[in-house]
Length: 130
Image (cartoon, rainbow, N blue to C red; front, top):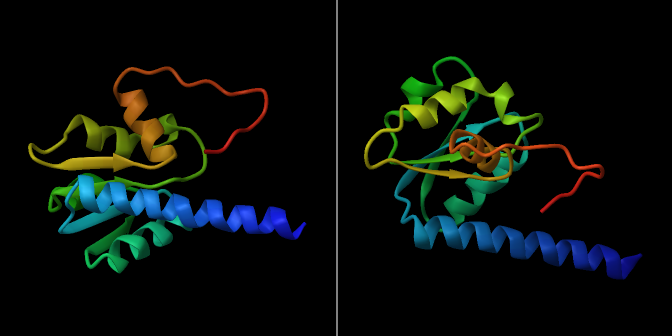
């Protein structure tokens, strides 16, 4: 229905605003990098950060991730398919964190941070988003 679509659009708009506010105002980004875990939302995140006047470089998940991330003070681990255990390079990045480097995770990225910190993730009977 139209009201449902309007509600979803407002939810997306507010979600982007909140992500942008957290990233720009609380993390004080100057130049950041986003690790793309093969999710198109990564580009929405980069666009949102750029709309606030901050440059964001995106590079794909894979070999070389640790070397590329070393040059950045701010790193975003993006959403993506699968589970954190499938993203060993991102987990290694967390293990070799550079002093003074801030790492922010969204969805799968947050799950990577949680697993690295010792959390146990499990599948719900029904998929939940948000």
